[in-house]
Amino acid sequence: MLNIQAIPALRDNYIWLIHAVDSAEVLIVDPGEAQPVIDALTEQQLNPVAILNTHYHYDHIDGIAELVDRYQLPVFGPNNAFIPKLTAPLSAASKLAIHPSFPKMDIFDIPGHTAVHLAYHFDDKLFCGDTLFAAGCGKLLGGTAEQLFNSLQQLINLPVATKIYCGHEYTQDNLQFAKAVEPNNKAILQRIDDVDILREQGKVTLPTTLALELATNPFLRCDKADVINAAEQFIGAQLDSPLAVFKVLRAWKDRFFVPV
Image 1 (cartoon, rainbow, N blue to C red):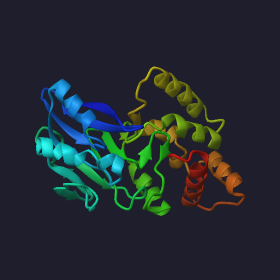
Image 2 (cartoon, rainbow, N blue to C red; image 1 turned 180 degrees about the vertical axis):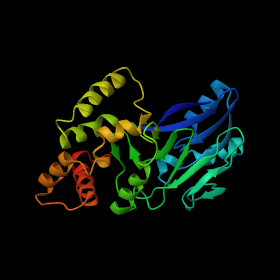
Image 3 (spheres, rainbow, N blue to C red; image 1 turned 120 degrees about the vertical axis):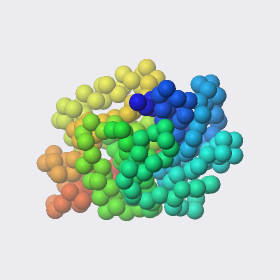
């Protein structure tokens, strides 16, 4: 059994603490700053045993050095020079043992948002950084549209009950774009209501599930007639493949909500 805790950081980031139940040991995922993690560990008397990093953007790495210096932690992540104190460069792997207190993990290479990007999957949970968001996906900030599309196609083959833990609280904005693409999608409209209630209560909208994403995330629905039609209307041309639809959606989203 694992307990997953969201630690808010910076403007809209989440740092994830993966807590082995019946133990004080935790894994830290993508610490963009150190102090919120230190505060949580101290208050709850938890013992960090490793850092898992998904990609090299500052808001996912800037707390690593301070945490390593304080707790003497190994750092797992993609092989990239920008990741400080990286001790275990990773690429795609199956059943990787990170620590005895935690299940073995499958590591996915999922570039596109950045040129190198990892996801960690175990125990029906996926920690995917900024590749797949609730109702959205990452911007192209170093990778290509083809890479990002293929990475998402890789993730949709996971069991639909998979819980998805991404790096940002972007769900409300992403759902407004999803509604613009599919205004008659009842699942999107219901999800907007549900998410608005959570945010009004100050609650986190994550994790999501793959089943919910397949029903409401336009970037995972590029083969659906309504999504294809919306993309074709936006671009003013016929599109001949799900990849072509994806490219249009990503460009459309860049104009729809600039920060995401």
